[in-house]
Length: 567
Image (cartoon, rainbow, N blue to C red; front, side, top):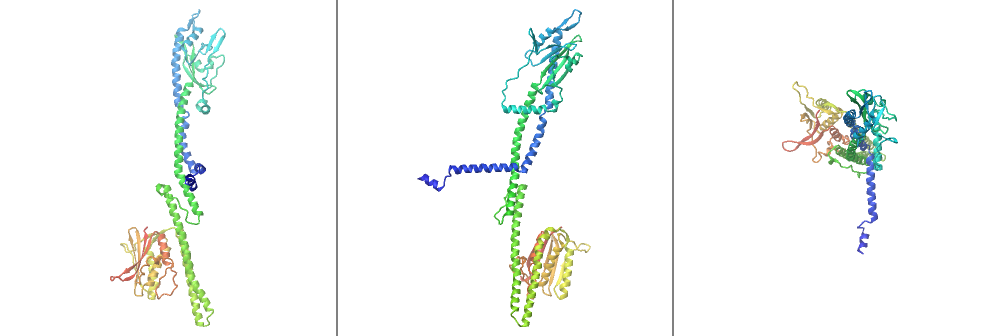
């Protein structure tokens, strides 16, 4: 009964569920491996690493210098052996004919060669001065004729895989330029000295050697030296030997190198896959996450946080994460902006609708005229709102597309203040006082910042206009510009009522309005300071607002400070 309760409670997975999980894990690993091999970045990393590793191996397949040294050593050994044999034959196998001429004794030379070359793989052939073959150590002569002795190959004990590897190796080696350049070894039934160039030279009194290749591609090494007695050439001794020992030594060296190469190749492939995985896999995760963000309709998609990698991919992950957050913030800002626009436009539209409905029921001409004035004011307010909203909506695109250029803020403020003086002081408005730094010769010190001159002028013009609006006729608007550290600081002070406590940050919000009581309602959209902050922040600067206080602690006016990075 307890066992049944455990099964019903689902505490232990069944055998079928365990197998299903294992198959799912294996399938997931297989798919991951397939994706890794399909990755172009993985293939490039593997190609570069393997190519660098394979280049020296291709050269080592020849090992020509090593092989040449073995061949030369074998030729030297054959020559030393041949000189000793030639001296022995000249002293022990020579007979004097009736005419007094010395010549080699055929039977004696055969016996001497069999004795001297017993248990040896070296083949000796003796040629007479006229070129005919006298004796051959691989040919036995008896009553029944001559028998050629050839060593049987060893029994086949190689497995199919090794045989395949050896065949591939032989195929590659036979196509090496060094073997293709060697003369072929051929042996005619009636051998003569003219068949072998080195024998001809030996009959002329010189020692010579030759390397050839047989029909199977193996090496055949031979040396020939004269058999002399008192400077008389009695014949030519040719010693030859196949290069199987040399080929075996070279083959062994090549296989040793190939084994090292195989191990290095395996390590290189594994390290390359690991390296590609540390690059391609997180890049794929970031790409898939970015694609999900593109297709998603909410914020449920998260960019993988790889910033702890402390490398370029970590930087990319952090940048994508910040970019995604900025995108969501931008979408939220657009949504809030749309809501604010709808709210601000709805107010004058509601007023217009109410005035229109009322004017239809009123017969008094004076009331009708008043209502028509209200409608006209609301239409003008709508026109102003739409113009400012249009400017604000285009601002981001313009700031991102336009290229910054050096802007002389001293010259710009000087020109703007002159315009404001002409506008306000002639109408009995406040005075404008400008304080700008000057050079030793009295000219203005150019406080240069990188930016868009038109948009910066819009910021300063808006601050000067607001200050003049709130400052009484007998007050002053003071503008001060100076260089501070690596920034240019512009301060605009007024003698107005100041900013209500708790609204020092809110005044930069969209559609925030607080106008003097003497000013007609609806003449401002409430976007001026919001647009100004947007422009200043796009230039990498800051804009802040605060109240000035007199000695008694009362508010003496407002102060706006703009800081822009210097050029």
